[in-house]
Amino acid sequence: MVKTQFGIKDLENLSNVKAHTIRIWEKRYNLLEPDRTDTNIRKYDLENLKKLLNIAYLYNAGHKISKLASLSAVQIQELIKSNIQGLDSEYMLNVFKSSMFGFNSELFDTTLAKMLEQKTFREVFTEIFIPLLNDVGVLWHTGTIDPAHEHFISEKIKHAIIHQSNYKNKALQKSTSPTFVLYLPLQEIHEIGLLYANYELVSMGYNTLYLGANIPMESLRHIISTTKDTTFVTFFTVQPENNDLDQYLIDFQNTICKKTACELWILGRKAKTEIKNTKSFKFFKEVNLFIDCLKKLNEA
Image (cartoon, rainbow, N blue to C red; front, top):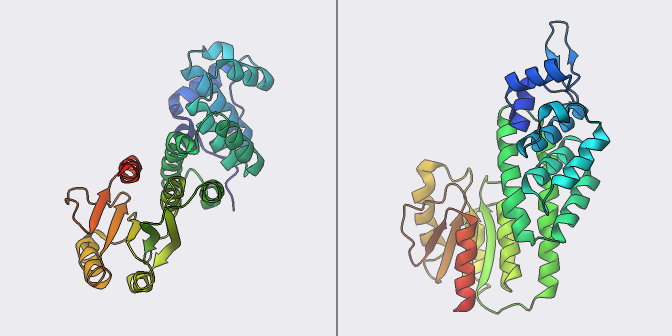
């Protein structure tokens, strides 16, 4: 069952306002109106959550809580509009969170469209979506959100990346070399980073073959037999296991690159930046390093 009520600890995790402070605001200013269980435990609905996210944003912007508590929902929205300078990242992050909790696709889509009028998709992804996904990961692990919420926002971001990639794919003339083959190793399913890497590649005019998640290494040999000047791009998020990382690289070298020259570019939190880049392997701990490498390659 999807979570529709939240404890005070959930509100703390979502708003970064301490539970003690929330209790004070509630007692002193009647800021929120929680229900209570038979054992007198506070439970907050979605409207309380949205209100707290808006109040927290304005409070952090310098407004006094005593004034904010006296405002209606309409007045709060008007005050937010007058406070936002351009497209404020903190507030937009909260809007996307609100779309997640309400499973509101229209709010997600209209907010993204508004942002893209003033920002590039790269800016939206790095300034908003990456922090949002980091927050969602923490919230999921602490039990603050239901898996349905995590899946909803992840799929919306995936679809946004695919849409932007298709737009770039049609608009740009493709270079002939190299061909970038994007895949995730066996049992690896965290695909958003790989989709974004594909977006950056097609944005710079490169040919890409997108294989997606959960690809056995042996399957990559079919690619090598049909393409020339091949660079593989992958993300190591949870796979391979730490003890198997070195062996994966050895196997890749012996299985894929032994007879045909190729490269493997590795991104993600398991990218072993302590290992020096070699002729066959490049490691990128951050997506910005990957982007910088592509720019240099484009200029060469």
